Amino acid sequence: MGVASASIASAVPRVVNRWIILFFSVLSMVAVANFQYGWTLFVPPLQKHLRQEQALIQVTFTVFVLLETWLVPFEGWLVDKFGPRLLVMLGGVLAGLGWVASGRAESLTALYGSYALSGLGAGIVYGTAIGSALKWFPDHRGLAAGLTAAGFGAGSAFTVAPIANMINSAGYQAAFIRWGIIQGVVVVIAALFLKAPPAGSLPATWRKRGGEEVKKRQSAVDFTSGQMAATPHFWLMYVMMAMVATGGLMAVAQLNPMAVDFKVDKIPVSFLWLTMPALTFALSADRLVNGLCRPFWGWVSDHIGREKTMTLAFGLEALAIFALIKFAHNPLLFVIFSAFTFFGWGEIFSLFPATTGDFFGRKHATANYGFLYTAKGTASVFVPIGSALAAGKAFDFRADILLVIGGALVLFALFLAPTALKLDLGRKTKSLLLAVAGALVTYGLVLTVVPTVWTPFPAKFTLPKTGWQGVFAIAIVFDVIAATLAFFVLRRMKAPSAAQALEFGSALQASGAAAAPSKAPAATGR
Image (cartoon, rainbow, N blue to C red; front, side, top):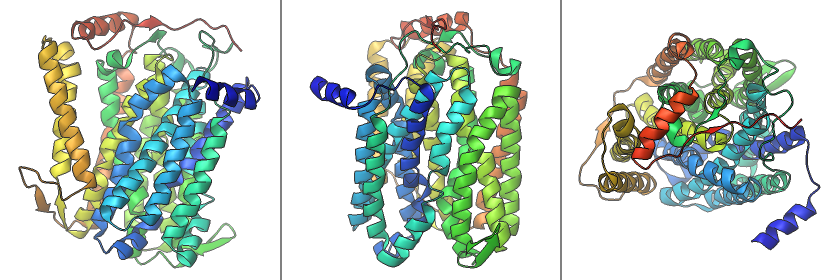
């Protein structure tokens, strides 16, 4: 392993410019963007080929997002410990293989398992790239995280049409296989140029640039993930991110079926000297806007503060979703308002990582944001439920119940009991609770992939038919609540301090869950 690493390192020119490293991080994100944002193109042909209901096909998307998000904390820990290069190469291979296998899947179980591989690989790439931006650019966290996230948001903008054309001409199987290979190879090449910043080095502009609103809320203490998760700041941000992610993920997964239901998917739309079918135009515009908004909102937040920017962006998304549902029957307005929905949604992937770096430090940034990023996985649970609500179909909640109970047990054992409730559970009790939680979560994930697995309780219910208006009304309410929390609660909370880190560290150490905090290094680099 060491010889292989040395050979790779010697084969690639030594990269010392952090902007070049950022470029290849963005490139790796571009290459995995279609695994999420290109999914909606495959839903109708998969539904037809496998002869399954749309809600069951959309479970694939949930499986992808769950594995792309919930394993990022562990992957982030590996990156912080071993560096980004080999892990991103592994991520590229897994993501590519997942799409190749999806092209050969002849059953729901095979499709779920194949797309799970893509989720695992895409999560490695995503978590590593964002963590790298937070570490290399403490002086431009919002902008750097936004540029990196833009690769994921806009990366599929220019490949939507080629993939859609290939699906129509050669079939969705060929599109899965060929583009899986192409995208996997690009990630592997980009990984060769990635590296972590030298220990103890910070740019000369550290704490000299950016608005006062941001600088006064930047902590000089490096919180571990356990200490971070013991703060109210983390859980408030987690709830906010999950609520805002819900609307965006629904739009990502459901845009194609919604366009078909409103009968605008194939109607030509002319705008800015371009003419394309409404759905293809919307998908291309959405991906482009989704990418451009991330560095834009990140740059804004570097100057006026993260919380004020969240309030503006979340409010805009709520208005855009309302307009999209109101005017979805008009092809041109369908394109315009779906783009504005993504303009107000994509910023969560620049604002939340930047805020995590501000509040909890740079040293553990990859793992820390990995924990917060699981909020996207939590939100993904609502995507197939949204399909069932829109059509008034039955939905099986067994896996969701198991996942929620398992997650609640982890939260109680590691954080609520030792910190908020001041309970000393003891090592045996805590280990037992975590073992039960792990079994429930594993059971839930297996049940998601293999729905025929037995459970001791039924939980299949026919949902009321709300139509797309009812589904997205939920997303609007979530956006408004999140905007309110950002402005009136998060903005008024003081940034976590060294004293709080020590307090949280002592409480968690008593339960064997965390180490003592460390001071951030002084600025020594350029």
